[in-house]
Amino acid sequence: MPGYIKAENKRNLADRLDRIEGQARGIKRMVDREAYCIEILTQISSLVAASEKVASILIKDHLDHCVREAIENGEDPGEKTEELKAAIERFMRI
Amino acid sequence: MPGYIKAENKRNLADRLDRIEGQARGIKRMVDREAYCIEILTQISSLVAASEKVASILIKDHLDHCVREAIENGEDPGEKTEELKAAIERFMRI
Amino acid sequence: MPGYIKAENKRNLADRLDRIEGQARGIKRMVDREAYCIEILTQISSLVAASEKVASILIKDHLDHCVREAIENGEDPGEKTEELKAAIERFMRI
Amino acid sequence: MPGYIKAENKRNLADRLDRIEGQARGIKRMVDREAYCIEILTQISSLVAASEKVASILIKDHLDHCVREAIENGEDPGEKTEELKAAIERFMRI
Image (cartoon, rainbow over all chains, first blue to last red; front, side):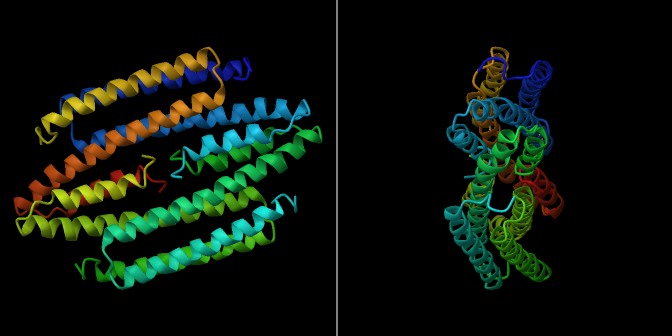
C-alpha cells in the first residue's frame, strides 16, 4: 500500500497536522488562563473542522489509489468499500 | 446510471425513508403538544442518525457501482471521487 | 413545563418539520426513480441540516425557559444542564 | 468571568488536550510512514470525538456558571444563551 498518499498531499497533510497540534496547544493555554468559554468552543470547532478536512483528503486519496488499484487488479473492491463506509460512518453520528 | 441502487437496497432504503418521514411527523406532534424539550431533541438526533445511515448505504452503493464502473471502463474516476468527496464533506462540518 | 416553546417558535418549528417531512418524501421518490446518487446525498445533507436547525432552536428555548425557571426558582439547575449536555452530545460524535 | 472552569475540570481538560495534541502528532507520524489509510481515518475520528468531549464539558461549565450567574444577577440571559446556541451550531452542520 505504501505510496498511496500523493507526494503533494503528504506535505499538505503534514502542514495541516502541525497546525492542528498547535491548535490543541493553544486551546490548552486558553483553558489554563480561563479564556471566555465561547471563544474556546470556537477554537475547538475550528480544530474539529481542520481534522475533518484531513480526513476528507485521505478519503479521496484512498478512493483514487487503494479502491482503484483493487478494481484495476480485477479484485472485488467490496471489502475495501465496506471498510471505507465504516470509516465514513465514524464521522457521522451512527 | 439507472440500476446503480441494488434492488435489495431499494426496498431497504424506501422503508428507512418511510420511517424518517414518520419520525418527522411524530416530532411535529411532540412540538404541538409541547412534549419535554429533551425528549424532542432525542427524537431529532434519532432522525438525524437514521438519515445518515441512508446516506452511508448510498455512498457504498455509489462506490460499488458508479466509481467501479468508471474504473472498469478505463475512465479516470477522479471526477467521480471528487464529487463523492464533496458529498461526504457536507456530512462533516467543513 | 407546557408553554416553554415560545408561540412564535411553535409555528416556525411546525413549518420547518413540515418541510423536513416533505424532504423525506422527496428523497424516497429520488431513490425510487434512481436519481443520481450524489444528488440524493445532497438532499439528505440538507434534511440533516434542517433537522439540526430545529434542534438548535429547541435548545435555545430550553435554555431560556426551563433552565432559567429552575434557577429563578432557586433550584439547582445541575440536573437540567446535565440532561441538556447529554442531548447536545447526541448531536456530536461521542 | 475567571473562575468559571471548575478546578477539578481544569486538570481534566488539560489532560484531555495533552492527549489530543499527542494524537495529532501520532497521526502526522502515521501519514509520514504511510500507515493504512483506514487506520489513519480511525485515529482522526478518535481525535474529533475527544475534541467534542472537551467542548461538551465546557458547555456544561458555561451553563452552570456563566448562564446561571447572569440569571442570578437578574440579568437577561438571552445574550448568553444566544451565543451558546451559535457555538453549539458550529458543532452541527448548519
